Image (spheres, helix red, strand yellow):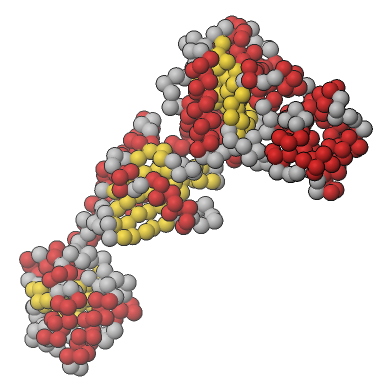
Length: 531
């Protein structure tokens, strides 16, 4: 612990006597300084013991009280008055002001030179610094050993917290707890911390924040990996923390960064291997024996049956951060099950393989992922391929999941939902198998004039056509769904007929319009242009 005024007064050979300000005996001492100026504070930084013969105290009680008050305001540690020069004892006004401010004042006997005080104090401070560096070195060695041994993030934070008297918590870039020392979450509520970080975080990545309150202080450090924050380290220090915390805190941040960097490298390698496997599986390049071998290598070899879940976010944001956030959401939900799983990103979609005993369990798992997306306000859709025990069926399950995803239509502004090929009409499944050019021809050829009209006139012909067909030509029901009068709807459908040259009373034309709308939905689901 830091040397205090009480420690200095406890050095017997100096024979220093406290005469006022006993409430400030626990003030830490940083240095000692001798001055006879009336205002020495401009040359001081705080934490010093000021030694004086009292020349700056001459001038009456008012001057003496003001002198002490300015020292206390400047956060000095204490005042030592050498007797036998200007004063035979500390003046009453000095003692009274010191007691009011809780600022220690002590008397130095005439025969004790100031140099004896400074030498004794400096010797103690140097010894204290040596002990501090020694203890800091022990912390650094411990963290380095844990890092080499691969003990993990929780062990790093626990060791640091125990050795420095702090509470340590690590949040990821979404505000979720990645690691914590025992009891840290009770003192540092993660939700409150994340709100604080979001409110105070500056634009740059290289920053640190310190916040203080009656319970101590909190330090926030971003942990940088690859030039960007991979997490946020939050440390809580009590009112009297170990001083070497400040020396080793950045060593902790470095150790955490190395651990996160290693974890990211392993995760990238694993995702690349999974991606290569999925590509080869979809292309039909792998024999059943090779599929089994790769599944064993990826940790799914012992699974009795494997289901496939493909997830895609809503338009227009399919950026890398958005896709990564969706992958983390899927991974988070699957990690809560005891069964093994794999998760990767293919063509801006998240693909997960997971163990499921049967269709019911697979559907339940997929719905849990979709529920998590809904809870977080993520517009996403999911295609599910039912579990296959035979490796030859895994390719079919993957294809079915992709077809179901594409045929389910876009997720924009809609609740996250799960689709399987069993949920889709045959026409949706057939359309999902078509190339973009074929779907474009089907949709554009018939809907193009209507889309052009809607753009020019800010009209609703396509929406009106869809409602009319979805309600089987029932004018009243379709008009209610659109919140318009049935005469308005009749006018719009006549315009559709005029612009396309088709007859909405003819069953064949209705079917073609319906297929064109479904083709447009599949195109939108793939992220291509379309109605």
